[in-house]
Length: 233
Ligand SMILES: [Zn+2]
Image 1: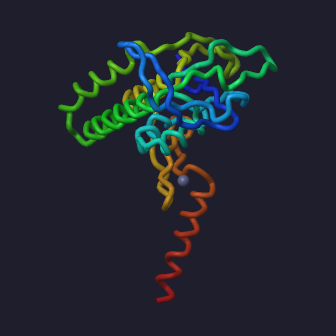
Image 2: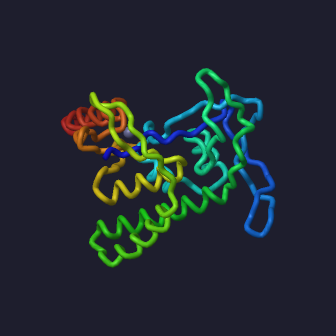
Image 3: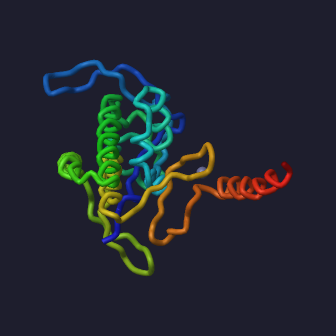
């Protein structure tokens, strides 16, 4: 079974999102809350596959400052966590941004907080603290319970591959976290100075160390300059 993680789809307004107070439903009725909404309701939505572009999105989200600016920057780039469009458009059909329901910022804050807590537990376990295992297991089970996936068969490697495609970005993010702690994937930071971007070290690309050729060349040039600087002294 292949991971369907890269197949998760989000819909991003061409002009991005803005933050506005909107009425949202709560278990007790309704309340006003700060929400992400399309900047322009007449915008078109463009589909995106955020986990295909950034396979370590769970790590990126855990690093995100839970401020309106930090959340807005990530939603503009990757789409909304829990909101999906009501129906898939026909080929060539445009979908207007006002079909997206508002998404409260509190959802983002809660997921960022939970991801940070789980990343801390995971790093503590990796550092030898086996006592953190039960706590991580409990937190992750809570997050994966009720996650929505569709079983799909997609063409690849000359045959059809079975995969579980997450329906919402938030489910894809927790699926990725589970893949990392189960050893299916390895996420590392680019070691180039002033970079630190997350990248995947998969089995197929286990030699990949830097996020880009630009970072690789930067480190290579710095290493070439260093012996010359010592000789000059
Ligand atoms: Zn880099």
